Amino acid sequence: MERSEVGALVRSAVDGDAAAWKAIVEGLGPLVWSVVRAHRLSDADAHEVYQTVWFRFTQHLDRIREPEKAGSWLASTARHECLKVHRQARRLLLTDDPQMLDTVSEGGEPEQALLETEEAAA
Image (cartoon, rainbow, N blue to C red; front, side, top):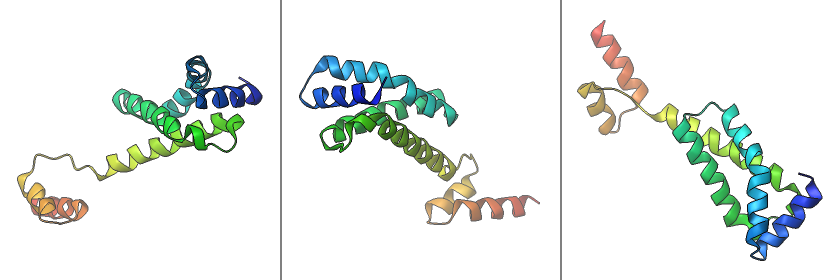
């Protein structure tokens, strides 16, 4: 899909043209998917990011200054959303150790709780 065509479709979508919106999603959807897949997210996270990217696009559709660069906007947004998911996943603490859960729930740091648990086990 050429940039001039994308720009025209975005302008039409801003004016409420459902066919233009459909053409944008069909034309640029594979681009969004390629960025999401490159970040190796789980299927659930990948679908969530894909939907979030399009949601953000609808939120900002009428404020995009250069409609012909919508593909770049979508790719960049997809990349940022994927990185956000990765950052959130790093913050998760998967454990069934009640002592570690107590430490974290009391305001302790997960890394510190893990170190203390491992030291106690050693």
